[in-house]
Image (cartoon, rainbow, N blue to C red; front, top):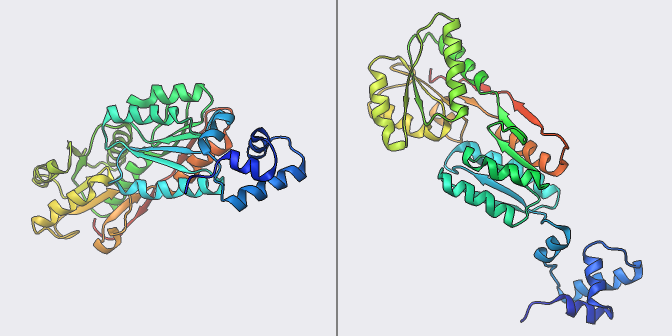
Length: 315
């Protein structure tokens, strides 16, 4: 069966296609005429063309979401929060994962603009900022998650506070020397390390040793080098938590007896494994990001959430 068209609805209702279009796009039409059009559309099973509607409106009702890496536990609740707000405002969600490839991030943001999304929520790297800023200048609300960008809305964590929470907990657990595994020099991780260094310094503890890893395959070597001089390992990104934990347990080390372990971002198995974490309120962050798209505040909004320590004994 062929798809029912606006012409079919018009013929069944005994009106012009222009009248049907006005009804479907909330134009000024007599109540009795609108009732006939909606009755015809329901009888025929007509599904309004969202693309046509977006042409009339100048943009679609879709909220675009560009995520760096779906393997990180942080993003799952973030997306759930975005989706709940989007659903409440009758907005579909268009999701893209860039797998941490800079060229793909910029391309996905451009694609969202070409689809004339209602608004954009993104966790992409700095390479996509200029495209997002152009979208905002053209009237599309853009929200950056986990970073702050001048001229754009942002929803982020107080990452320095997360580092200070780590330092306080490690000190309370009697840890004297700390090794850090970081995934990159992204601003979020840099601020967490800075907060950790500050917290340790305030407690007259040695400054931590940091090793950067490009991917999970480099984690085992990083952990091996840090174990030679430290009694605790900190991971500044939830993405590498499982790899670091595996590197420790593969050596037969017990937590906290042989080594302390503290990481970022809570996830489903953290409680079962007894891993202490500094958690981000990712669900609330996702909701707030989507609300900024829906609310469209006139001035760039900067929302900062506070981290929470969940101590489970691994330190």
